[in-house]
Image (cartoon, rainbow, N blue to C red; front, side, top):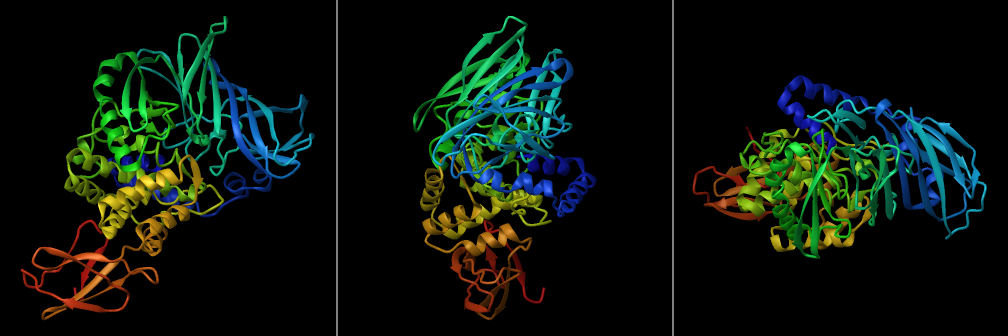
Length: 553
């Protein structure tokens, strides 16, 4: 979500900000030792499988600091004497305890290497607890940068939030900060002033008054959860709820908002049910029935925290009242509800192992916007929406980033990625099959971390056609496929140019009157008979994100 919001903000604030953003992205091509420690599966990470967190954090609003601990439970895959735990400066790791003994550790930037004393027997389940404190990085421009947000609401009450996608959850608590491994469940216990409420992921199990002016909120997540989704929202929240009768039965809907926005929220959040109906149709059951669905008002624009979606779109349709598709369709629904909730399927249930494959999250969430438009207003409207977003594509660099260094690819993972998926749907040309592929992917990769290549292979298998060159073209190059053609009499010749070797995507074109037919261009010239209603006309179905070039133009 983070890059999309920055890009969209640049669109509406002007070219200078967009140029600065691209310059920042381009400069990050020299990677450091710290990048490798953050983004790779180091030997000190590879030997253990994360199973559970018990996170306990106290919020100290008076000095904008945190203190607490995290119990890290894990399964031993093979014996190894050192464990990597991540915690970002300026936070301080006070101690690490296992079997009632303090362990020694050394710090290497934001990574701590803990020397274990007890035997680590393969197959055994072990745990240790890491204690810490300090003033975390402050989020200066959330959700586009990471850290803790310390603000006040409109009535002057404290409001504390987390945004850390990309940057990493170690900005606020010690953990295994790499996307390939997730805890199978988690306890999140947040202690804050007893006049405030904490809203975190999963189900609220208890609220305990501590007798010292604080209260502890105990939330439990029963499903696997990626680190950056774990969150806290501390403020003067009020609650209302509802129930959605979904594919897997009753799904609780919980809404936490500022009291002065309660009436607006009750109206705006009615869109949640139509969103769930649409996404369950296209993607399959909501992935976290046990933990429920929540929307939580945020001071920042929004983030896809699992079962605790942050919402800051000011109770209006569009993206802060604007249409990112430039078609009018994007003003008919609330962007943050529709986009961020799509991440429950794409990003939260199915998570990319490496940040470089973030398109697995963002391309599908972007494409989900057009599917929602289709569900509400018909297929043509959905097509117009996704085609309209092409104006936002910049083709500055590949969508897939650099692996093992915590590097995201281009922000084109949103608009270009969504148009890639719409193009593949046109190639398959069978909406029943397309739906089976999308729902099947969510069954096959349910609650898993995967690589982009795994998802690509699944799509090819289900479609019964090799889609690998299409994925390579749109994900790993900045080249837009160019369909070149020439017309001689009643024959039209065509070929692909500006493509990866072996690219041979079939495409629907109008060869006679207004009827579309498939042609199968390759990189060498081919020809077909041509009987246009308008002399010289040669049209391509607009659902294909390609360039059309007549030879000689």
